Amino acid sequence: MATRTDLTWFRAPSADRPGTTNLCYHALDRRVIRGEASEIALTTAGQAYDVAALLAEVGALGGVMRSFDLAPGQVVAIGLGDPVTRALAVLATLRLGAVVADTTDDAAMVLTDGSLEPLAGVPALLHGTASQDPVWQLEWEFALSAGRTDPAAVVDVAGDAPALRLDGMTVLTRDVLDDGSEPARLVAALGAGEVVVL
Image: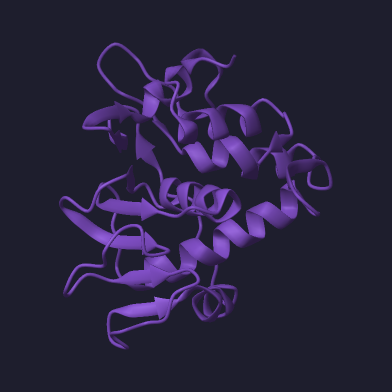
């Protein structure tokens, strides 16, 4: 299994600096740069995504999230049952330097299929469920169509910045590859060039 020493760094950490990186870049962008764009990255029943296609979907979702002024370090609550959609949400959140969470505590955005209740005045992307608030809630496919016109670039993230907040525990960016959670395994497997089967 990959560990923190395998993480791709924009600026390497040192004794007095945490370094900078981006976990989505580690998982996808650098693989495109290395000529692996057409390699299969993720498969599910009846569908396969190569690295380039997965990156395009993640960039589109990130573009939508960024349009709501989601800033690095802010919390994104993800409650999605579909594993592919959940993987896209995790990678897009990390692309923007935001924090993947499994509860709505302090959430600046909610991505849900109904398993997490959208918060009043907080942007929400809804997968497979109708919007009840046209100002704050967008339906998934409509949102992605808009996001494809302006996909999100990667954000530099400090190695000691929070990346995951799951089950009440916070995992720092530099430690994600050492973590055993589902989002961590996704990033580690993609970064290692493995095919993720969902």
